[in-house]
Length: 364
Image (cartoon, rainbow, N blue to C red):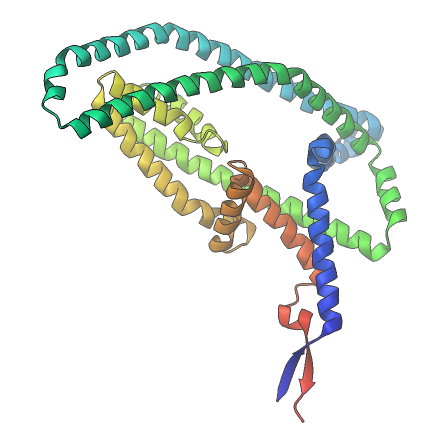
């Protein structure tokens, strides 16, 4: 029979590796605000590398020109996306401002009717209920004022941050070009700085992370497709016009960490009830509940299946990301886990804790 005893040398090595990984992640996240454009540029350079190789092989043009062409293509796509979003924003804002007067008129009319016709109803209510209603109304007014102030502050903040965003994009695009055009130089530099076996490990981690991230993107595309199908069928049954277009917009919003499906559906539900269209309001509420329930049930399973992780671990990664960095952690949590998994596989060589920490000791 063989006994296992804690090996102090193995424990020290394990602790050192774990501490090194923790320090590396701490440094990465602490400096991310300063290194973000270069990290994004590195990812983009990996993404466009197959296209650059294809252009170079087919046309025999120099690599720096092919890289320039690909970066210009990315820039054109970004500009077109910004123009499209800006145009849609202006159009939607125009439509919104056209609707707002009638919306507020309806609100004022309903409040006046409630004040006029509700006195007899309020008089007959117990004092505690009346007090509760007053507090609720006051809280509602306060919440609306707070929301309005927050919206104005957000608009101002966005306007102020536009020059910084433009500069950020400029640095990212230029860095992408240099990383792509001088790729071989950077590879030679890295090879000269680290041992050969380290370089092979770095390449393994890079390839594994890229593959896993692509699978993660595929998982969220599947989730978005499911959301679109649910919304489209639901709105069609309810009888809402432009069901296809609305379902596309909501499905796109569903992937966004901060907004989600509720960013569109909840205001729509509130507006339906306020405008005395309770049938539509209840129908949208039921549809929203179904979408949220299906998303919560399927997301861990779909994401876990695509990236090769058990749904429970995926759920834990999403929850930790959500609690740590907020709504963005829903996506960044699983990505961080994938990076950690790749690093652990290389550093600890997929060994069990028993192998990493214990040594065999034969029984006398």
